[in-house]
Length: 117
Image (cartoon, rainbow, N blue to C red; front, side, top):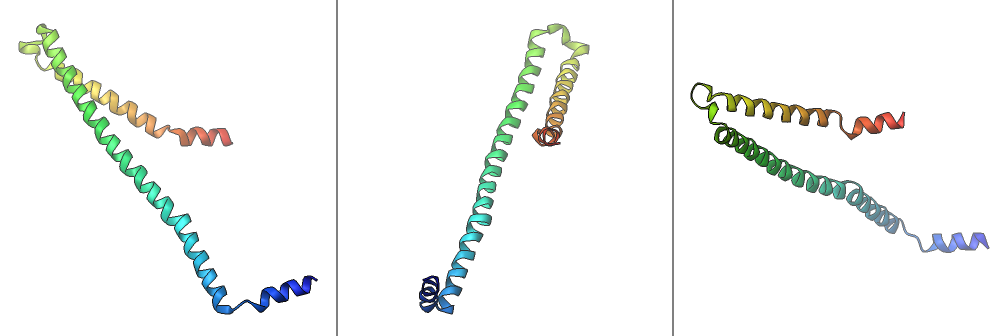
């Protein structure tokens, strides 16, 4: 009985049909495993870049707002000390950049690496 099943399967088979099925399978595989992940990665990168631009713009506005707040709230910083609010805001900006760089460098990849060991 097993022999007749295989013969029936092979009797209707043609080499051209097998090549067509193989080509269709390869095309579907390439689309599913390369093109779709690349599209998803592109979408992720576009939204990430757009979010980074907005966060950067917001950080600049917050730094400018803190500068204006220091200049307005502390009139003692007028005159010969008028440079001090700028230094304070520059140091604040450096601290924010350092914290951001530290979080990027010690991201989730290192934590996952430590857990898997």
